[in-house]
Length: 491
Image 1 (cartoon, rainbow, N blue to C red):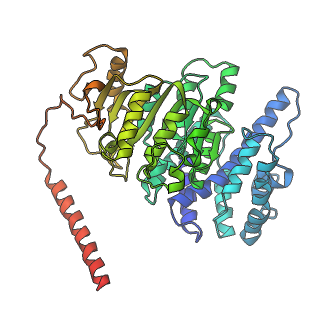
Image 2: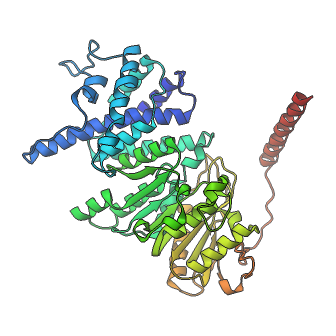
Image 3: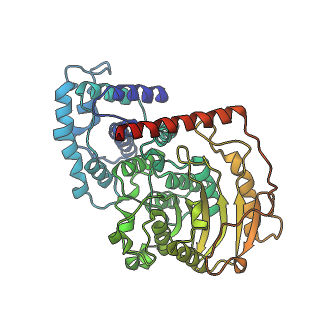
């Protein structure tokens, strides 16, 4: 039912002049979904208070409660069309009354780790883009069909929301930066192995996939005490995000997965001067896939000892600095980081090897990130001791990855098994056709080049299928046509 509801909402938004893409659909669905979620949360809290003989005071005042403005019901439990706003009346209420009311929560909240603060922050960042009040009425009616009361309902909803984020990632227009394949995230979390009590951080939080998967991992890591649950809710997950839409989606994603007031801040992580980071600001665990290929302005670069415009290289410096001694990290980065010859890359590899133990490098195949042709690696490191040996694993699959043939957890099972052996120091047992170790003393001490070629892999000559050759010819024809069209426009 949930899946069909989401599809129906997308169809409604597709017709609306204010929503032009999958990104807009997710954003606009999110705020309406959030208010419905909030209404169900308040009902649950009121029931729990009643059972324990207490009185619950609603967060949202009467006029702005979902059941009053969005879905007033008649005595039969059906929508009361005499009271339910629609058209311009509904749009005016949402734009001129509801949003300004919800924005004020940020200033009035006791602290940033409360649901009140999150309400204020979300509605300070968002605006209603649904131009037709009639379309908005339809969206509200559809979302009112959804329930967030039972564990099963919340679980199903969180998975569907993840699917929407995934579709958004596949939709282009920067969507890919919001979505790291979940099998890869789960694998990174397993290898880093956080524990309850650790402070876990992602400074490029996007849709909060890393924090969500770390939460799921820790929830099932042991039988949780009441204190453990409180720790996971308030003192475990921390994120920063520069872009408004990603911030909203990341916050919503965590809330739907069960973290009531996520510690995600809307800020440019790289605007923080590394010299200002103190011990109290540090984290035990860093899990991240920072944006790569971006270029930062000169004034942002001044915050870093190693000056470079490459966003991912600045993030890596930030992560190393913000980790506690003994802290652990799993960070996705472009594979060219291992071999780039510019001064910044060389200095950064030297910094990483001398200040951290870079114990594992996972080399991923092209197509791991749908819609992005770049090849990536995952760096696993611990802060506080220098690197002596690096264990490499090259993920070689017998298929090409893509939208319909994505990476799965089974693909990574061999890596997880061998990585445990490599880390336990069982000499030789972690060597395979896809894995090998390098002694850091043997790498070039002037370039610190880490782009080691797999010494164990036998190169097989692969002949392309006729379909692959035809597909490439088609793409080349398309490129040629676009070039010729560009030349014709210039003439």
